[in-house]
Structure formats: structure tokens, C-alpha cells
Length: 375
Image 1 (cartoon, helix red, strand yellow):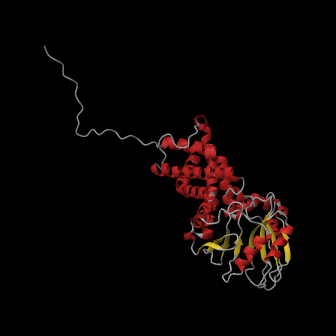
Image 2 (tube, rainbow, N blue to C red; image 1 turned 30 degrees about the horizontal axis):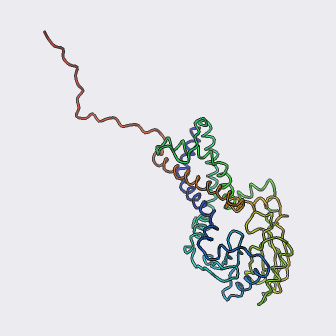
Image 3 (cartoon, rainbow, N blue to C red; image 1 turned 90 degrees about the vertical axis):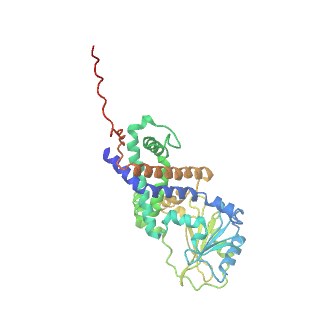
């Protein structure tokens, strides 16, 4: 138990601040749609999914001389389309008619963009993503070891949002009790975060249900060569065909071919799918807009369907406001646990009680017993 306690303390002291920052940024990102509705024109507009509206917006966006790489369509939670360009930092918001209402060429221009980049990549691309995944695994280890260390002290459990006093003993007591209280939430957020960042970890968890090779095969794009893109594609025909193939599904992302011989891809979300942008797919020949392949997300292997639940669970894209508040609590609790772990560790890395200094006696003589009186 002593070794486990030391390992828990030292590891928490070293990476606790990183987990705290990830928890805080995650808690903020859960409310990204609400932030956009409050700050960007047309973000509060009602979603339109009729064929005519979608086709008109796609025609306007993709007919522009500076054509975007893809368009993510407005959702029920916020009414803006988002355009992405070849330059990874360049993007724009449009209203649902396809008119640009805000554009930027640097991620620093939009708080939700750089916040997302930090939370997922630590401003370091794939390297940062790997570091974040490892931090998630470390966080899971903290939860498990914390539960083990708490068990002998379970009779002293107290429900407090903040330590009783800012002294080490009180902070450690609060740290253990809060960790136990939010452990189920932390397991969900840390596990889903690690699976999205670390492919091998995701595959290991899904392997009992579906072999990784089978999942990769099921999610592969069709090996069909597209023709030369037409100048004036009939987007109403293309979108209408997808909606007819999957009645009731939302059209979520439209991506023109990135190179010669590529296909137009379209992502849709069926009602049973939790993933905000869905994994149901339709592909079209850019030469004439003919549908050449489809993939129903509900027929994917079980392992793939479990994987598709990672993001909506992690980012609170399912369950409405109640679940968003639950995941906000999870993020803020992780922030508090990580911050106080660092404070208590670096304030006293040994973890041993500090001895009180003895009062100085320099310059003072010990009084002698009083001499007896003589008759």
C-alpha cells in the first residue's frame, strides 16, 4: 500500500496539472454550441434540412472561385454551416443560404477553434494527441489506485465541494472523497478520450467484439474511380438521392473529391446514431452526380458501432442539457483534483508530516533552583 501511495502521489504531482487543464478545457468545449449561438450571427437559426435549402447552399458554396474542401451542415443545436479549406487553419461560418458570416485564416482568431486544438492536440499535432491519450490512461490509473487508497478511510467520507481548510491533511481528505464521488464520470471521460487519441488502445478494447482488421475493412471507402467533375452539378439531385436512400436521416457533411478520380462523399446521421455527424455514407460520381455506393452505419460490426459512441459520450453530444451538465461536473472535478494534487505534492513532495521547529534557546540560561534560606 505504501508503494502504491507513493506512485499515486508522484505521478499525480508530475502530470496532475496537464489533466487539470484538459478537464477545464473539456468542460468549456461541452458548451461550444451555446457559445456560438450567443456570439455569432445566425447561429441561433433553426436547422433546415429540406432538399431545396441544402442544395441551394451547396451550389453557392461549391461554385465559389475559392471552393472549400468540405462543408459541415447546420445542426439542431446551432444554425451555421462550417467550411473547411486545404489550409488546415483556414475556415468560415456561413448562414444556411451559404452566405459567409465569419471567416478566419488563423486558429487564434476563434476561441472555440484554438481551445479545441489545445484540448485534442496540445498545439502539437499528432504528438500532442498521443501525449493527451497517455495522460488519459494515467488518469484512469489514478482513479483505480485512488479507489484502493480510499477504501481503508471510507468511514471518514464527507461530501464537500471544497476542502474544509487549505491545509495538506484536509486537502488530501477532500481529494480522496471527491475522486470517489466522481469516479464513474471520470472513467467515462478518460476512457473515451484515450480511445480517440490512441488507436491501439481503442482496438484493444474493441477486439473482444470485432477484430481490428474487420473494422478497418468495414469503414474503408469504396474502390471506385470517379469521372471528371462537372462544372454545374445538380446538388438537388445528389442530396435528394441520399435522402431517398436513408429517409429521415440528416445530411451532415459534403466533401467534393480532393483529387482526380475521387468521389463526392456525403455523411449522414440516422436517428439511431449518437455521433453528431453520423457514419452513414453515400458516394457519388462527380461527373454526373450518380450515386455509386452507400454504407449504413447501423450495419457496421459491433466494435465499430461501439467506437462511434466514443465522441458523443466524451463531448456530451447525446443526452441533451442534463448530460452536458454531468460532463461539465466531470471536467471541473478533474480540474480541481489535478490542481490540488500538484499543490499538495510540490508543497511537500515527501508526504511526511512537517516537524515543528523547536523554540530557540540561544542566549538564555537554565534557571537554577532557589537557594534555601539560613537561620
